[in-house]
Image 1 (tube, rainbow, N blue to C red):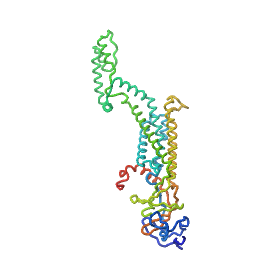
Image 2: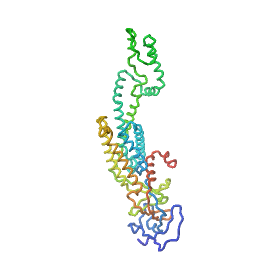
Image 3: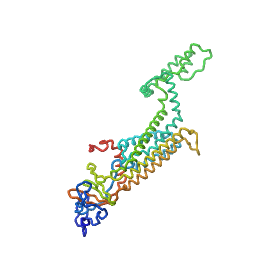
Image 4: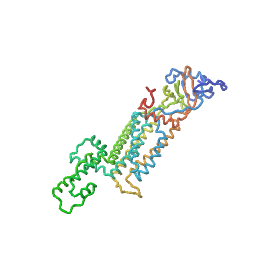
Amino acid sequence: MGGLLYKSKRPSALIVLSLLFSYNVAVASSFLDLCPLDANATIADSGVTWSQVLNQPIKSLSASWYLRPDIGGALLPYIYTAVILIIHVPVVIIRVVRWETVQTWCLISTLFTVIVTAQAYSSTRFQADKILTWTPLMLVIDAGSMAQVLFLVNEGHNVFGGCGKELAELKGRGWKLPLGKILQRRRGSDLEKPALEAEERRQSLLTAPTQPDHKQILVLGVKPSPPCSDPDPSTTSSSSSTSTPQADPRGPTLLRSRPFYACLSALLLLVAVLVLQILGLARALHHTHLPTPRVSWCSPVFAPFGIAVLDGNCSLFPIQQTFSKGVGCILIPGTQQMSWLRATVTGTSISLALEVLDIAVLSLVSGTTRWRGVKMRRPWFTMFSGIAVLGLLLVFGVFYSTNLPPGIGQRIWVVVDAGVPTVWEGELGTAGLRGAMIGWNDGVFEGWGSTYFGSWVN
């Protein structure tokens, strides 16, 4: 076996200039001294055997080359997580003290999170090897935020009670305008307001007593004092008939109130968050019963003529060429992904339980209840757990960006067949924040096709 390896007795003086590599003849011990390989075995079904490879000198890569996650193989980049955490911490404090000032921000933030999560679900199709991109763990803070807006806006404006009251009134008065006309009249209410005021003024003049002073008072909108003489019965009857409440032609008052739309938006977003969490939980639970997925990792050093990669742990990885991307990719056992599938099942189950507890607190605790001066009618469980989840995502994001994935060693031998089978020896490095951003962004927006990747994908 040792006779198959070419060993130089002195450093070679030949330096080959290349666009990708510069090398010297290797004088170190062969990987055959480390790994028991059959010299007659075919390498990754390429038709090349180890004996053919070892007829050539082992060459050294000029520098370390990065290894980055492929599409959907990265956790939320830590720079994104840091920005989200920096924003959410003060917002949570304000939600405890003066929540009214941030309710619009909470609605917009939750809408954005729901859209991104739904897009990640659509693009990744819940694939197990892309769990780092589509995990729904971050939704817990948004669920609590929407529950808070829903219950506290209702507490201040009695939206739920007003809704029932207006529905009862509409039923009693037979008011059957379709929703389209309601909204149309709602949009045109500002234009109709002067005409309505003029009509009310005209009706007031027609039903007022004949004295000029009373007529002027009615025009100014001030309630007149009763005249000294006994009122005319006919006038009294006419006035009483005109004071009967009439249906507002612009539609129900509830449909023209901002609290109603705030509650409706919060309710719809809360339902959307819960649906996304349940879907993610169900898919993650399904994948935990399947074998460990294999995850794609890519590097330009594997392209363009790479056949296979052997690492210091004697693990052999066939190279899948993607010439359009300018990189080659290998499949590594997804131990991280399997761990995150289990974490998603556990974490999402706990999140749903905490959300139920917070909804119970918001429903049952009085708005005046305080503890050491702090109002207790707040979603405490989801606020604190949401911040904790963001902190964990930040820590893991930094760790994954600065370490190679488990399953492959730093020292590698790349088998290349560019007419003559050759082995290149070198080291792999991490892709850092850039690699995480490429993997996560590609995973979320993969569903956009050529809109995101460009026309070359076609």
